[in-house]
Amino acid sequence: MVQKILPSILLTATLQCPEILIVQSSSIVECINSILRPYLNCSKNQITQEMLNLIMFYHNHRRYTDGIRKGSTPKELLTGKKQDKDWIEILLEIIEVESPELLS
Image (cartoon, rainbow, N blue to C red; front, side, top):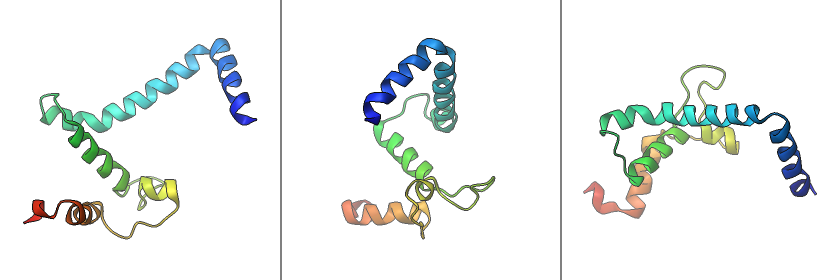
């Protein structure tokens, strides 16, 4: 039922206030841009899919240092499960399992 109602509500909201959805999507794009910009500056604006995956992993597993979310990670906030290890430790464990030759 909700799946049928939600698109019609969004369509109605878009027709009545199109600038609201544009502002929200622009905010998301600016947020992603602010995360990626330092890495793009270092790589002459050329970035591989592997590097994007690494940035995504870091962003989702790093701990916030300020604000109301201080001490938690985006993954913890999404799943509700505590992350006991630092992001680099988790990454190294994944590498050990999937590609141990990279660590030798």
